[in-house]
Length: 328
Image 1 (cartoon, rainbow, N blue to C red):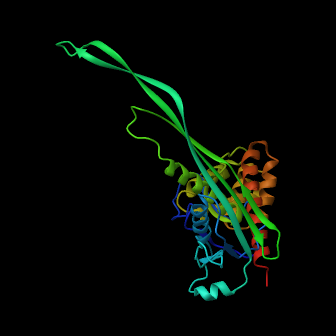
Image 2 (cartoon, rainbow, N blue to C red):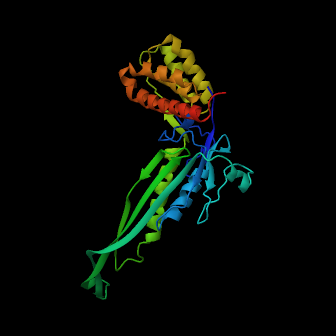
Image 3 (tube, rainbow, N blue to C red):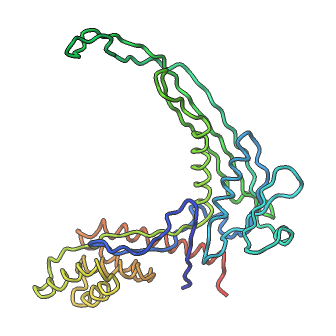
């Protein structure tokens, strides 16, 4: 089984130094792109997008896709469309000159449109009571009610994308109609910014495209199971000490959980924790088997199902990457 190290500078939480936390084991790995139709695409030509928000969206998507890295190398080579007009010259191949990047085969072409609309309507009013006269003790003795008219600003964002294979045919499609609204009144210190609202929706959609088309790296601290029922007294004490060991040395704790398992092959906590250790070390098939066995115990079902879901997802990522980079 090959291993991959995936980093994405923009839009992903990067894994930092391991922090020892109580009662958890840290698992990390590559998880799949949310759609499988474009997993073999390595080069994308971004055409000029239509619509009044098209250029902004094209740049946002280009930035997201350009930032994906696999084993420190660009996951995509993003090229500009030829033929004039507004194009986006982003070259994913490190050190490649523009003429070299444009001369190679293009895996797919990204086409799109994006339009925006801003509207405002009256939206009632707000009342504010304020003191207009106070006595010598500064107690309010006369009040007035101010009425402020309010409005609601609504920004619509309608993107549509198609990733077209070099040979023809749609590999990926994404359409949406995003809306943000904000109410404001005459007494507010500032009015809402339609540009900021649009920026937020463009970024949201660009992030969606990035995760649809490319895998991602995730790191998570997963809580271990601590139940000791069914263990002999000495083994119960050893188990408790192993739980404590997870705070300072996860690898050593895993070795001890796995060493105890043969003596208690049906113990839910040992099964799950050993499965988590296997997952932590990338032994995914072994982890899946241990999680399946954990499901047989009533107190381990929820823990085990979450583990099975993670492992199944990582196995799907491996299959995607094997399609993209067939084993030699």
